[in-house]
Amino acid sequence: MFGLFGRSTVRNLGAEEVAAELAADRVLLVDVREPAETARERIPGAVLMPLSVFDASELPDPAGREVVFSCASGIRSVKAAEMAQAAGLPYKSHLAGDIQAWKRAGLPVES
Image (cartoon, rainbow, N blue to C red):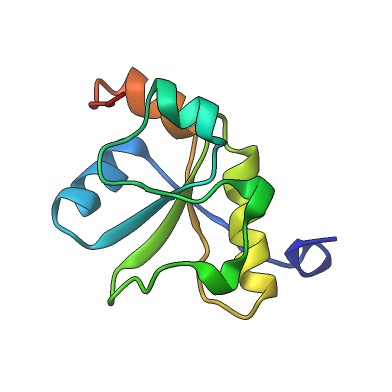
């Protein structure tokens, strides 16, 4: 079971907040969707690391930026944050509502 047996802390961030932080280079956005999903559309600047092969030790160095996970609906991004915390990493944020919320906010996607 991930999430330190339910005791992890995952912080919900809104699409506009993540977009502003990404634009200011204060966030490393990690998309944990699968390649077929990201081939259709993805958030510009996101690092791709599918949850099916997720290994917290292989996350890129955020270089002082906050790590924020994203996926299609919010379930996998929370799981990735919990897995990172279980591995001893301080990464606790995810894009609430994920790419769907991003698109509803009118923010750009690329394919």
